[in-house]
Image (tube, rainbow, N blue to C red; front, side):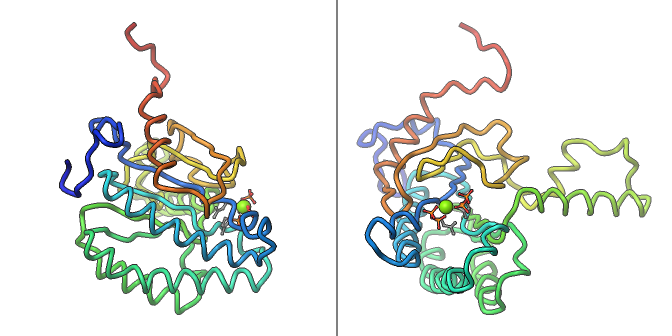
Amino acid sequence: MNSNGLSFDDINLDPAKIPSHVAIIMDGNGRWAKKRLMNRIKGHEKGADTVRAIVRCCRKLGIKILTLYAFSTENWLRPKAEVTALMGLLKRFLDSEEKELLEKNIRLNTIGQTQRLPQNVRTVLTRVKASTQDNDGMLLNLALSYGGRSEIVEMVRKIGTRVADGELTPKDITEETIVDHLYTRDMADPDLLIRTSGEMRLSNFLLWQIAYSEFLVTDTLWPDFSETEFISIITQFQNRERRFGRVLET
Ligand code: IPE
Ligand code: IPE
Ligand code: MG
């Protein structure tokens, strides 16, 4: 048993090979609703329940960082009613989860152009980030109004400004300089990237950070995604051979 009451024997996972950072493209809410002749918003509401379950499961497993793609820069182009509903849902989610994040020692962080979010969402984000800032059990990293390309543009602008100000010369720029100017600057790269609902694409997610992440796609729609399937994906991850371009001893 680990300190959270979860036995690794029961679930057949190797505690020594739990990924430190898992990133998830939570896709398929709209299709889940459509299949049931419901409004897409109902799919997003059901999807929020899956978020709760997966956050709990990651905490139990001892995963250190969970990054969830909740809203992309391109998602602003969806119908206004859907965007408004998603923002309302996000605010309700944060209001209702604050207590549990505190109890479970989880810190909230966001990546993305959060200045584009409505004021009432920004207010609750600021509050929950502040109240959870000293928690060190897990980092819940929400990608909100996030785009990998806009993250890269912002990074280049920041480094360009430092060069223009004479703080850096182009020759000083290394991979580390780039990492230090991304939204994810203090985080290890994702070990595992999961996408639900079968789409084999990145949709502008974490373009720099996933250079060596293991990628797993499931056909399950996000509202139907479960703790059991998540654990089975972690098992598959544990059976992958990560080579990082090298030749491993045979
Ligand atoms: C993912 O589900 C949630 C967001 C992108 C906000 P979708 O809304 O993309 O669901 P599908 O892809 O239309 O089924
Ligand atoms: C990716 O899903 C974004 C999120 C899960 C927030 P999308 O549904 O927006 O991606 P595409 O349009 O299928 O590429
Ligand atoms: Mg989608």
